[in-house]
Length: 187
Image (cartoon, rainbow, N blue to C red; front, side, top):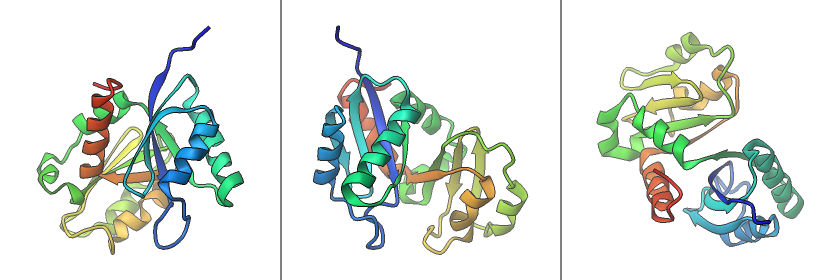
């Protein structure tokens, strides 16, 4: 019996950044193929992958993928799997639409789960006058017009939220949404 295939977007944190976590996308595709994933497509070297899988439990599949990378490359990245509908909903809920025009200044942080006790006051203390943020469920929105490279807010948000997070800018998310639509896997 053939199981139905589900589209997933894998967001890897900490690969191919700053010379650490080196994992060429061609090698990552091989790791994922060995796990039985299909129609694998990557976008840029920082770990964005779209694939098809019959797996219903995305959290378990994310752990399996992380363990497979550890076995093949010696480090285990955080892997968050989201479906195209979650991506679409997160993008539609963007509280900072003015930031979409300069998409590299608008970031969405996808969280492993809804933070039970986020320290929003602590995050507010890290914010510069030009930065804006909002937590909506399991997505952390950050508009940083001056960039995130030296942003104390961007660097401290995960710790103060209390749950693991990986972020992508608006431009990257727009491309991932486009790629899932092209394969018929998303809204």
